[in-house]
Image 1 (spheres, one colour):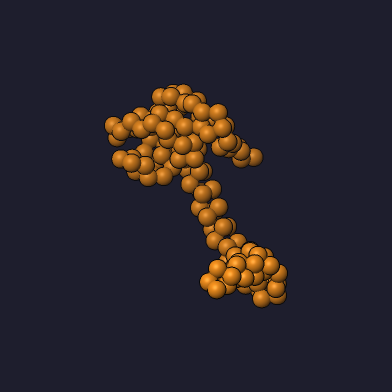
Image 2 (cartoon, rainbow, N blue to C red):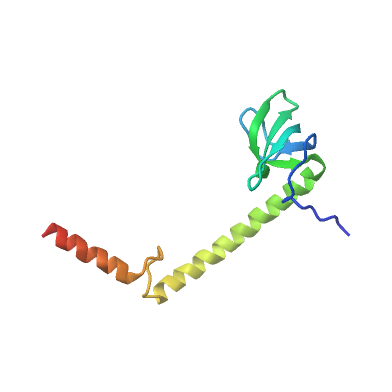
Length: 126
């Protein structure tokens, strides 16, 4: 049975990590080591990367554990392809719903508010 990777847990100090995206001076996939870990609701880190760059304030979403890096990339690609497929389905669904719904426009603003704005603009221009 494959091991489940929990990416929500904070990364501990001295953990070996990999840059999950291109960071300033650090290309994606560069290994590094966490020097400082801080934050309560938003975890951020000071990381020393192997290419000699030290970055502070690196967000939790921009790092992956070194041992989880291959699976992280696979999961990210799967998530991207799934979102692309759902995006295509959502656009076709929203186009058909927009035609059938007279309550709101394609931006989700109720028609009575749009009418109120039209009347106010007419009063101000007169």
